[in-house]
Structure formats: C-alpha cells, structure tokens
Image 1 (tube, one colour):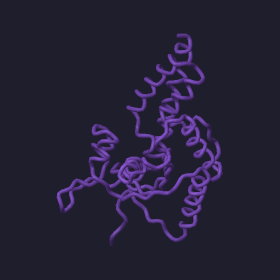
Image 2 (cartoon, helix red, strand yellow):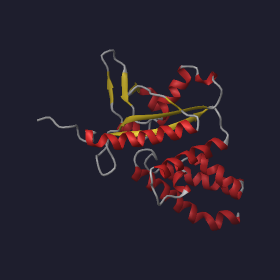
Image 3 (cartoon, helix red, strand yellow):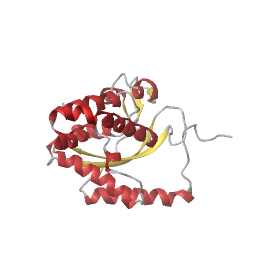
Image 4 (cartoon, one colour):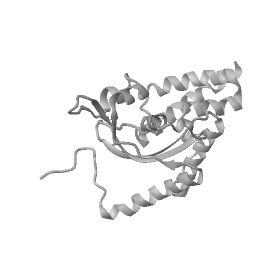
Length: 228
C-alpha cells in the first residue's frame, strides 16, 4: 500500500478549516499594509537558487530537490520563497512600477533533510517582500506585520527581538542606539554567527537557535563594545 513520501503530510478535510483560518489572517494583514499576492512556479532553473542562496551553502549542496528534465535543463523544486519573487519582479518589469513593490506569497517549500519535529521535506511558508526601497521604515513595517500576525493568531510569549532575523534590520536598530563603531563590531559577529547556524527560514527551531546565538553574542559584547 502506498503512503505519503517521508517528510510530507496530507492536509485532511478536518484540518482544512485551521489552514484556511491562518491563510486568511495572513492575507488580511498583507492587504492592510498594501501587499499583493504573487504565486510563482513550484520549480525554477537551478541557477536561480544557486546564485541567490549561495553555491556553498547546505541548502544548495545537500538539501535541494534538483533534477534534469527531458530537455536537459537543470530544475529545482522551490527551497525558499524570496528568489522566485525577485525573479518575477525583474522578468515582468515590476521595477518600473512605483516603488517599493510589496508582494506576499503562501507556498510549498521543498528541502531534502532528515525529517524531525517541526522540520519536513515539504512545508508551507508564508512570506512577504518589499522590493525597490531601502528605507529602514520598510524594515520596521515588516517587523510590525509579523508582530500583528502573531498577535492576531493569539501567539504569546514573544518579544520584538524574536522578529529581528535580518542582520540589516539589526544593524539599523543598533546604529540608532549605540553608534557606528559598536554597530560594525556587532554586525561582524552577527554575520559570523549566521554563517554557522541554519538559515533562519528553514524551520521554527532553526529560527530560535539563530536568534538565541545572536542574543548570546550580543550580550557577551555589551561591556567591551560600548567602551570602545
């Protein structure tokens, strides 16, 4: 008897209402902030992900579902959501629209990794991108959107720092609080940490480990960095 492939799961009729509830909450938040939905193909040219994620990362070397189609093209099932959105942004001339272009997606993500609690070979991801404007206010908006979504879903025990997955956002915040020298010191440390831990978007447990590592490094730097 056939079973669902390892690391995947069926969404049965009794579970559909919960999925639709979360999707509707996410869509509502995005609409309030002026984000429009985009749906990209489930597979792309392998080079897109190798270039955007990095050819020497674990994602590219070990986790991507890559195959050659009948035309001899190297194709990869989507391992993350940002690269396809950026590809569509450029391909369809969205850079000619008023900037920033605000887009969101709800999509299946595919990673070949050892299945465990909270980590699947196919999982479903909600994400949003504001492209074409490097104003720090956009970063603040992105954080606020995540905060509003978590609050709307009734999730407690969170702090604003838990949402600072972007080193760029972290740099903006620290720069405002402490000045440029301390910021450079912390950004180097944060970059070193992020190169040693799983990608923040891989799974909730990876996100938490990433944030904990960054927090620990920041806490250990409070004394020396501020004095310099």
